[in-house]
Length: 337
Image 1 (spheres, one colour):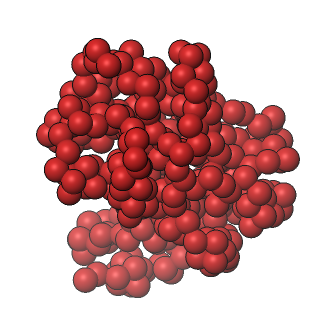
Image 2: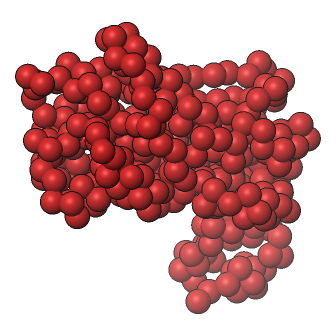
């Protein structure tokens, strides 16, 4: 493979001059530029696009950090795609880190990103009191939070209306005749879990149904907790007739339990999940779900981050996007009992 040094030797210039030509530096004379470009063409030199993108310019490393709590969650996969598309379009590179809702792993990745001198960070913090992320923010690093924010600091934030999404999910089940509706939430320390619980509870109360603490369960936002907590609910002496699950991994765990018990959906147990998935329509029956725009969240977050990099002193912005109830067969039809 042809190297930068090969091009410099053939053109009779230094490697620094070749580098300046590749980066369209204004200080290069037309004659020198023409000679270097001719050497590049003759040698069929292919510059390393990654190295060029990461090369410092104006004090920037052209690197964006992206830290997510669970890369197995399809919602965060969509967020990552949205961030990456915008970052790439701006000729930056992105470091994607998955801390798996592990505080020590989050610290490790944040330390690594800081050592790489990233230009900005898109992050779903460990919780609202995440001191590691707060410290980076207070040191002047441009930060945009997604899905969950930080308490007592001004930070750019993009979320969905979790309360309304949960309310509409439970309301749909109530209108279909259900009164014993259970909620399986993720980590209680995460604001989204609590906001979805609040929407669940208020929907019940608005329709004159008392909320039953026995029907409310919180896990760790993962598949196994959905599986385990669904089993606890369905084994109650007076089990629920419907489940509202707090994210797509919990939904998958609950569905596994339902099928293992050979229960029919929606005849024996109805289910509505928070998070729609591209394969929800392929389930049997297709899943009724609250759709949140993960890709749009990622895209908007990256755009907000570049705005913050350009205007570090502007006021913090909070963007709340809408969810959408996608009605399919798993929530059933109107019940007479």
